[in-house]
Amino acid sequence: MKPGARIQAAAEVLEDIVSRHQPAATALQDWGKRHRFAGSGDRAAIGTLVYDVLRRRLSLGAQMGSSEPRALAIAAAPKALGFSPEDIANLCDGSQHAPAPLSDDERRRLVEGLPSDVAPHVAADIPEWAMPSFARAFGDRALAEGQAMAERAPIDLRANTLKATRDKVLSALAPLGAVSTALAPLGVRVPAPRGPAKSPHVEAEASHGKGWFEVQDEGSQIAAALSGAGPRKQVLDLCAGAGGKTLALAAAMQNSGQIYAYDRDKSQLRPIFERLQRAGVRNAQVLNGGDTAALSALGPRFDIVFVDAPCSGSGTWRRKPDAKWRLKPEALATRQGEQREVLATAAGLVKPGGRLTYATCSILPDENVDQVAWFLNAFGNFSLVPFGEVWRETLGGEPPRSADGSDQALLLTPASHGTDGFFVATFKRVS
Image (cartoon, rainbow, N blue to C red; front, side, top):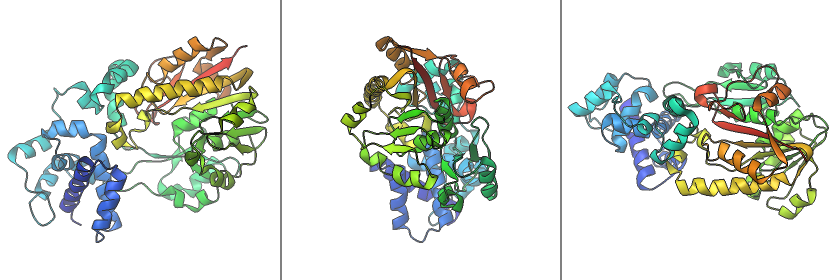
């Protein structure tokens, strides 16, 4: 397919997303089924363009003076496909499968870029209703943080120390351009591609099949490390999901002690069994999903309870940009209620002197610092441990600065740390 045809195809996929309320992945898959002549390179380029539009939907619309799929696809095409704005304008020539020629106004807007007088939430590509919370977290850095959240994300991996070292993983993935992460001591990063290229399918690598690494964002790796999980400890991963952090915690424990994995949703928990086997984990007990009686029966025995709480997912907007626009205030309120419920459950499972790690893949203070304040008020037998102290204990060296300027809990972000958005707070049970 010619570049112009790729732009037109992306506009068609975006139209399906808007008119049929389809997730981006589904719309792209459906388009591929209807256009089987498109090669893998074409599908990769079209998908790249669609996701780039979704990351910057507001600013692209303001640039073009239109939120129509055609206008958005054209505006995102220079960066997504690796052409100059002038080249993109010339590619839209109305030939077979290409977009219709640009008007003089469209051509001017494409070349000039985003106007300087747009609203802050537009420039930051943040839903308008969420901008006050965003600004509360970052202050005058809100624009930079929002723009970083609208960039492509790298692929981060955690070397599984039960089977390999980071150097071994780096060597195996050297053809993919793998490098060490800046903060996580076991992290490996495959940089985000430029232009129409697609990120490599790292889980197809032989080294993944051997259990040498797991796909896990650097921020998530740091959160697991800050829990302090180690040999001979009793650990509970309370919201285990598919088990990514369970695997990280088990590796830190060197297959000693005991780690329990639980999730209220058994379907979310289902993949954990194959992952535990591949990673060589032998000290994990997986509770039946949703079995609250079995969970309660464990009692306050744990040195560490790790809570990766259900949240808005706002910290992962780089990876799931369509979720940014689907999130509504009512859903955020629901998540806050779920977070308080799981925190209350966790509090009853920590032994005296033990720790509770609260983490979210969110950048919104409603789910982070506000929940910390609620928990400390509701549970007087817990105190907050400043993250710098926890960092020195677990990771060593001087901690990075939290993106929100706090010295109590750690907020990691793409702009400040190169990670996904991730929040970590540590509580100690004092009585």
